[in-house]
Image (cartoon, rainbow, N blue to C red; front, side):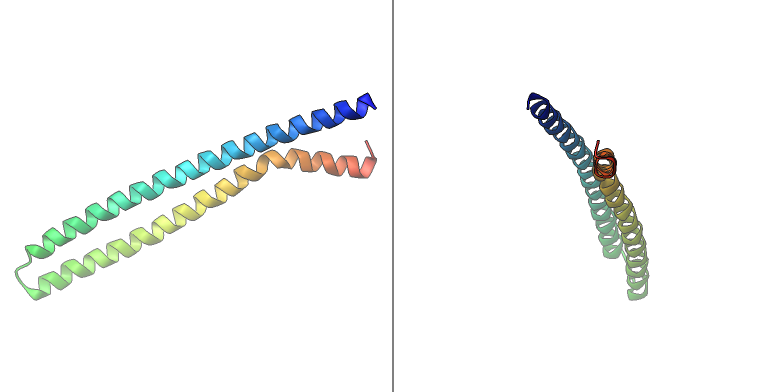
Length: 116
């Protein structure tokens, strides 16, 4: 009976260690995503402000359209690049969050098939 209790206690400790590793990975990934979003927001705001200043200095309607078109193209390309980058960060976050559980899963399969 004491052996089963020790095994149960060991299993509980391993589960807690795995959960803490997964939490650390999620926390690190979420922080990287937050930093990336903040950087993009700052850059986007600065780009928008610069465009407004250029528009205010435009002498003709054609020049204003040219400035606006360049801004829209640049903003769209930046959004596409940022979306791709965030997608990669989210995928990395998911991989890192699951990684600690892979060892437990492999061990559980071994126990299920061999009974040990």
